[in-house]
Amino acid sequence: MIGVFDSGHGGLTVLHALTQRMPREAFIYLGDHGNAPYGPRPEEEIYALTLAAVERLFAEGCLLVLIACNTASAIALRRLQQDWLPQAAPERRVLGVFVPMVEALAGVSWRDGTRVPGKVAPDGMVAVFATQRTTHSGAYPFEVGLRAPHMRVVSQACPHLVNAIEAGESEAVLRELVSGYVAAMLAQTEGRAPDAAVLGCTHYPLVAPLFAEALPKGVQLLDQPAIVADSLADYLTRHERFAVQQGEAGHRRFLTSGDPARVSEFASRFFGAELRFEKA
Ligand code: DGL
Figure 1: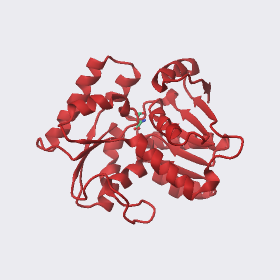
Figure 2: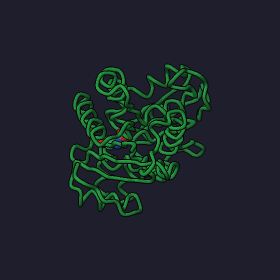
Figure 3: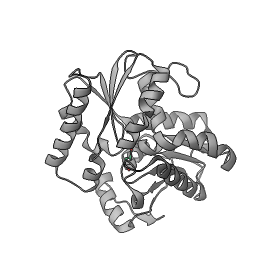
Figure 4: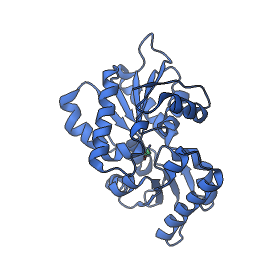
């Protein structure tokens, strides 16, 4: 089974796209609801929590884990791949949602630097809305800048949005928050509209219509879950040993470090289907 990890509910937007794109694939989802949100946490804590989650999914037998959280990917992915995995589990893999987005923006393959179809012109401008920690890490502008040095990446932190979504705030409250963050982004660009916007946090697709409404007309809203699903499907065709094994097809399991009853209720509403979480 493929492990999918997020700090809480947000990764379900990615899991939804994965199951649509690869219905036969087997997935086990781990939400660290007991420790969410990650956005305001110090880097060392995010690294330790992400490492523990990956170890937990490896213990479930996953050979491949996708970190479906931008914050955890931005902070922990490189370090896990370079410093931990080669000793701890060299035959297994950890991927993150951050890499397909960097490839889609820069139009350059992460793996070998060859050109891939990009979503933005090489000298275009892109706005990345994300958590405080992802924004402060500078990971998006840094990695895109290495591959597309003429692209302008404008980062905008949205510090209260994850909590407001998790708390089930009204649409009016969420609209006000989102339009405030869009206005703050436009203040950074002196009013110039970007070519594209990335919702660089897995919770934000839940309020994508509010971003679409607040952004100037013509800004392309990139669909991170769909981009990640395409990228994982492509990865599995190149690495068949991680793809579904006989007898596992279409299997799904859901684990949480939080309260399974509460999480199941919220997640079922969110996913549009009954999901039963077990205690991790
Ligand atoms: N899921 C996280 C992300 O994609 C955000 C939620 C959190 O702050 O825990 O960045």
